[in-house]
Amino acid sequence: MENKIKWGIISTGHISKKFATALALLPEAELVAVASRDLETAREFARIFNVSKAYGSNEELAADPEIEVVYIGTPHTFHYENSVMCMQKGKAVLCEKAFAMNAAEAREMVKVARHENVFLMEAMITRQVPLVHKVMKWIADGRIGEPRMVRASRCARGEFKPGARQLNPELGGGALLDVGVYVISFASMIFQKPPVGVAGLGFIGDWKSDEQGVAVLKYDKGEIADLSFALRTAGVNDAYIFGTDGYIKLDDVFAVPSRASLFIDKKEVEVIEEPIVGNALNYEAAEVMRCLKLGLKESPFMPLDESVQIMEIMDKIRQPWGLVYSNDK
Image 1: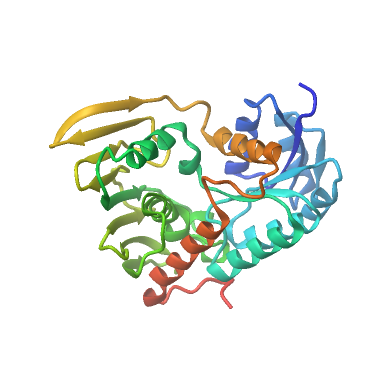
Image 2: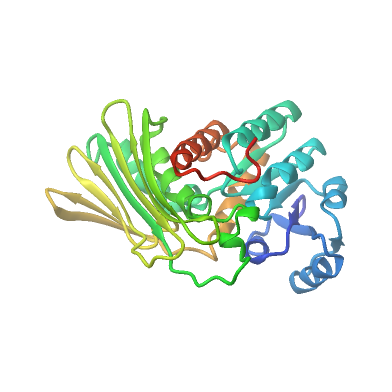
């Protein structure tokens, strides 16, 4: 295919490998460069994924005139600086969730995107899954009446070695940023407005990062979101949307759902089943390219102001815990 959109990837970690695999499914995409702080690591990544250019610094990739859009797959603590650097070089950016470490960084990222007139999107996979769009149509069509409550859980039981990114506070580790963002973003997607009240409890473990937590969000018309998230606790990762006339259930794992059920009078009346194509990160990349082709600077499915709003919620949730990140000012 001619006129392919040229991608670069910053980072060679697990999620970047998944993203490179996903890009290969999209004929309109071409991965042309990868960057790592270790040149040999970048070269090995390039060999595995048949990438023509490998850089030993992120700055070199950002300066490459061939690249149109950059995927940021670095740990949370680097999302802000990597995204801003790329945008200031005129690149479109897809930044892995959580969007930033805090709301101040998120606001600055959006400010830079608008100043530079470039595309920016948080890589929140749930927003791009086709089945979720159908669920949102159920809601828009009034199938469950007025949404009143959301209940969602994103919990995993991981065994992590000391220093592992997932629980390393110096890399933005912890349950809130790593998995809590899924349930908070889900509630934001359903109610489509900021909460007027935020409360939560969390447990900070021996590594000085949060291992699990719960949050309750209250909205202006009395709507409630009941959310749980964990990295060292086994759990069922489903979600419910309760309305005045019925409810919707998204099966485990709700963040990347392939099945949704509609209940009226406690009876299942309709089911949507749609298998996930690839590892689902391809949906994010496809949305970026759709927007670029239309000349959009942000995605209607993951608006920039909403990404900032979600970071503001997470700041409020952790503040009573005394959880302070290295990037906080």
